[in-house]
Amino acid sequence: MNHLDETKLDSEPFTMSEAIAEAKRCLHCKKPSCKTGCPIENDIPDFINELSKGNFGEARSILAAKTNLPAVCGRVCPHEKQCEGHCILNKKGQPIRIGKLEQFTADFDYDMKLIREKIPPKTRGNVAIIGSGPAGLTVAGDLALMGFNVTVYEAEGEPGGILLYGIPQFRLPKDVVRRETKRISELGVSFINNCVVGQDLTIDQLFERGFDAVFIGTGTAISKELNIPGKELAGVIQSHYFLRMVALYNDSKVARNEVPVSEGDNVLVIGAGNVGMDASRTALRIGAKNVTVIYRKGVEEITASKLEYDEAVADGVKFIWNSESTEYVGENGKLTGLKVIQNGNELIIPADKVLIAIGAKPAKRIISTTQGIEVNDAGYVITKDRPYGMTTLKGVFAGGDVVHQPATVVLAMKEAKKVVEGISSYVDAKKLLEDS
Picture (cartoon, rainbow, N blue to C red):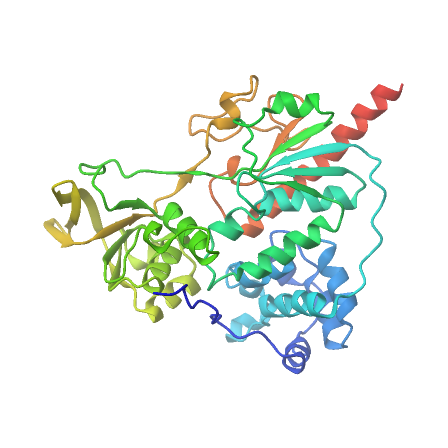
């Protein structure tokens, strides 16, 4: 099988005329509920108003005031729960397609190479960012625009984090991620790849290199295991690992046989969040014969967005509800099925592979090599409100999923923006004391 044919988007982007026509539908409410529904409070009516007049550059500037990742957010945010879900026209089932308008604006900006705002000189301080996912990229871009010299340390071969290695190509094309990270680099942000902080260098060494503050945005790198008998069997796979290997395969960085789902496999996915939907749909695209999601509750209680669930059903993913997984079954060290209890009855579902998608938690690599950073019982980094986002170690900040339970891209960005204010106020105060 050749590389995955994942170029077809789930929804075609707007043409220019379609985007303007859609923008003209906006009612420009006096109290725009769409804006309050957006976690980062994008100025939605304002950018849509500019679109309706054909002022694409102004629309882009309005978006840029709140987001560094408009092309990403326009594609993967759960709009039906956020901006579009709060649109007044949603009461009639016809909300403004805000996500597609944001995507159009970002894509137009890229295609037309619009002139950008002037970048301030980097004289305000030096900040190191660990991790280049949504939180790290948001902090890096915002600080650069505020006059900080920013360096991002990324463990993988190129920046993007979960955007590049966790969200499938059919949901978020990788060239979109690469152009967004390139745009952030054009703000003066430096990226150092293939550098694992906590292994290749420590936070203490970052401070020795002259950084005034450090931001930890490493997300939740460790997948949670389902601690039931048989977990050591070959064929029991973490969904995050599977998605990462598919991304690497698509980039010709690993061979097909290193992707842990083979053509013709019968695949079960445990968990019905967005990762579970991504894993199940990707497994079908990589050539699995059948893919079935096993969930311990009912369809009304899934954590995946409705759109993700509907598209998984449309792709041919099957679902078994109200089923508790109790044991991986196998022969000669190899998985052959999954034992579940459904409505009091025990049954074994045959399977060649089981993909686990029941959540993730932060890695301990950075914490274990740095004294003074406290975590809670679940392993999440503890932070303060003043300055916002600072850990229990002076000058070290954290945000995104490494601080909170795994969430969406835009929620990670929301928290990151609040941490930016904490970092900037801290570094300004530090410089003032040094100069006094």
